[in-house]
Length: 149
Image (cartoon, rainbow, N blue to C red; front, side, top):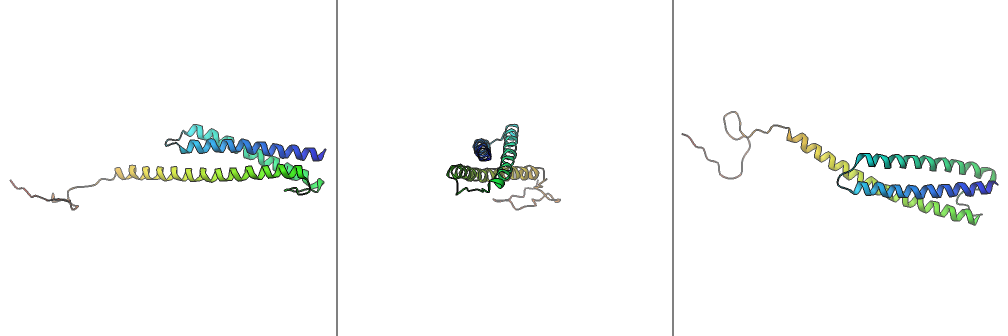
């Protein structure tokens, strides 16, 4: 019975990682857009958090089941479990790579936002073309004419 429980938990971890992979792909697709929909991104982020909690729960359960069976991943002594574990580690690797791409996309959006924020802040800075005596404070390219009437 315990062996079947371990198999069931490993299958649930594998399925949850498959769902996580789909969510990460959706998150990356949303972050590739020039304009982000924050509500949609928040929904994806919440789904990702829930799945990560689920995976963590099943992984803790897996470790509890392994102890009395004297088994541990990667299950070299059991070919059926070893295959499941190999699929799990493959999905973890894929998810990790997707997560790194998401991080890069987020960094790009943060830099873009910071540069726009700087432009907006600089736009409010008063720049004076003329000094107190009516002369240009900054050198202007081209010819300068003083006209008196």
